[in-house]
Each structure stands twice: as C-alpha cells, then as structure tokens.
Amino acid sequence: MNSNLPAAALGHFVMKVNDVNISYQFYTKFGLRPMGIFPDGVGIIELRGGTHIVLFNKNDEFPFSIIPSHLGQRGDFSSERLDLMIDSKSRSDLELYRTTLVKNGLSVGEIAPDQFFGHYYFQLADPDGNGITVYTSHVGELPV
Image 1: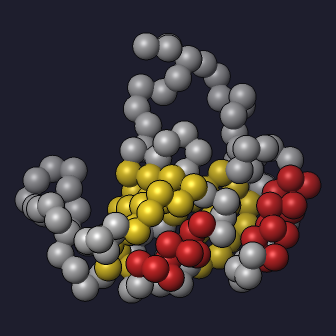
Image 2 (image 1 turned 90 degrees about the horizontal axis):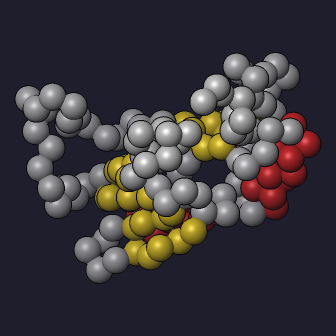
Image 3 (image 1 turned 45 degrees about the vertical axis):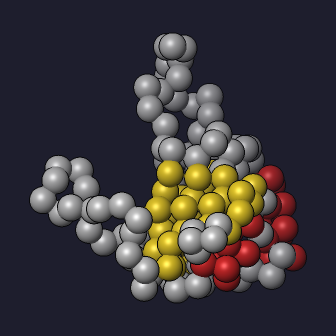
C-alpha cells in the first residue's frame, strides 16, 4: 500500500431523490461519468477516483437494510450534502468550470469572495434541494 495516499477513500455516496432520471441528468452535467440507470430504478454516476453517487427514489425502500441501532449507520439519507473538487487550485479554472455548468443549464451561485481554508468555491442546489459546494483542489497542500 502506498503510504503517501490516505488509507481509505469514499466508495459510494447514496442519495435519495424525487426523480432518479432528473437527478441523473443533473449530475452528469458536472462532467461526471454516467454509469447508467438500471432496471431497478437505481442511477449510478462515477466521480474522479472511482467514487460513485448512487441515486435511489425517495419513495422506494433501499435494497439493503439500514438499521439505526447499529454504530455508524444512519436511517435518513434525504438531506445529504455533496462537496465536489475540481482538478485545479486556481480561481480562473474554477471560473471556467462554473461557466461550463451555466452553459449546461445549471443555476449556480457566484464564486465566494473569500477562500475557505485555501479553497475557492461556489454553491448550488440539485433538483431535490440538496446543497452542493464545488471547491478548488487541495492536492499538494497537505503534508504527507
């Protein structure tokens, strides 16, 4: 195992949404890799690094059991928040990415005037009102 890399990475991020098709189209406008909408109504989109956003309909039961009494499990995924990072540290690259999202039909906020822990960022909401923040990268800024 490479000691310069974190020991764990996010594999799947589960979101319950009102309409899997609408949310699937929304998230692919970020330039994320569409993996498909499957016969059981589950949509999967891949982020850089192999992490997947797994979309379920809010009205459907999960195909697996979420038990609130077990440590580390949560029973409600309906108000998740997603933070995304672009592959750049510069404000100008974030402005270019933001412009691309606007051209793709997304309604996005302005880039914040101040940095947050060294990151430039802007915010928007998905079709279900889940908050999304898009940051510039921190790659290379953290000690190994």
